[in-house]
Length: 247
Ligand SMILES: [Zn+2]
Image 1: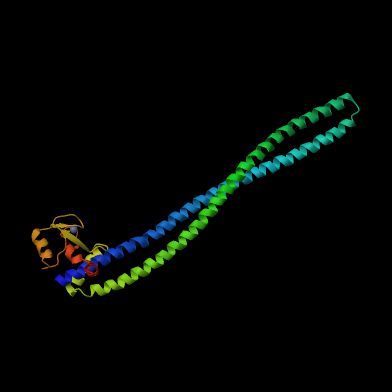
Image 2: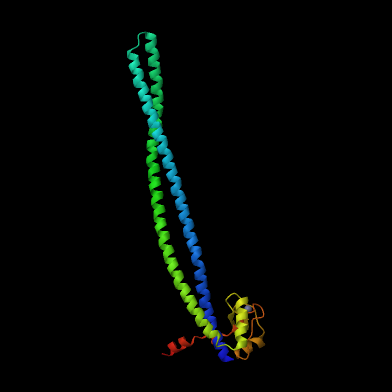
């Protein structure tokens, strides 16, 4: 039975490794999702500033065209003024020109405001574009690294999984089937330590008789509360580490 406990100790360590690998593997798609969400945010900001810039530019072009039109009107009216025969005609033409000039001034103000604003919008657009591009290349780089890491983790997971099969085969048929059953029920953490008549998995107390049997390696027991197979710390000692320590 003591040998079985040593095998269970090895299995516990391996299961913990597999559990960590699995957690890491599951974390990667989450991290990629976060990166992609951030990139979408930058893309939206870039789009917003692009829209603002284009609207301002359009308004400016329109004001410039209207301004040109008013200037033409003024020029034509001034030409007409020269041909006026009566004072009334002359005054009417002068009034018309005054009206065009007032409109021209307003348009000049609009054009000036747009011209001043457009530089600010251009800067915001450039910054937003640079930030988006930067985030895009960062995301691509990170994604590539995550994918490579994922491949490595997966390979390691498969290797450890194969190694685990070898270890499980060292268990007696009864212990092996018990282990598989508990493994399925506990989602990967089938074995845990017991110390001072307590289960370190769920922190509940176990009967002293049960604890003594585990301690003496007389029988294999599950925690009555969480159902995990209980072993003592001495079963978990890594034989390789002992060998290292002795050197
Ligand atoms: Zn427990």
